Image 1 (cartoon, rainbow, N blue to C red):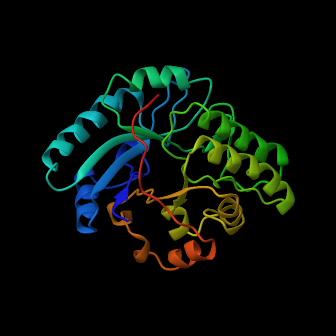
Image 2: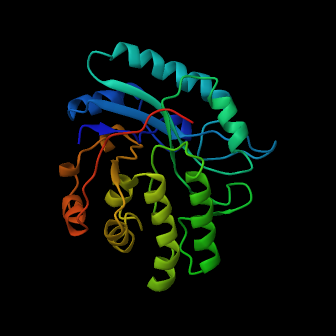
Length: 255
């Protein structure tokens, strides 16, 4: 692994370290490419402020900072500019119109809420409600169908604690859509190292058997989290257990 496209900055309000520190950490690990994909700002209704993403007026600073560093480090590593995007039909078109005003290499889809942050629920909280599982799957597939996303981050973030049959029935729809749309599914390092509910065996055993494609993502919120698989105890065993072959080739550009 010599490429990572899931890297955050302090603008998301829950990460630490400068962009330069992330880049230096990537170079030290032998990375050839590092993509920044901080949590995208959203054109939310007036009066609603997200505590987990940059504000819309920070887009220019985010872009300008990375453009300057991309030029400075061009002989040592390739720097890409992206976002981790929360898809929502209510805000997506307006968001993309704004993002297209700036240099942008790619976006990845990261669904943390269903149907959205303003009116929905956080999918990482434990739930045994089938309706919430279905809501997550439905909005995720809707986002994938836009054709704009390079891959799906932490596809098993939904923390469904109900029975396996219900889980598999709905998640099979998500996996099948990803396969049909040729969207890789991310094995998320942060979730693994933090002992979160993802990446989980019941999702990736299913995804592997169905023939999905996979990509690794550091989901780095600190420079020390820019890692390779051998840095993380148990990760290679997880990959081997589910016969996961990954490809770090990223589809660039937007539709």
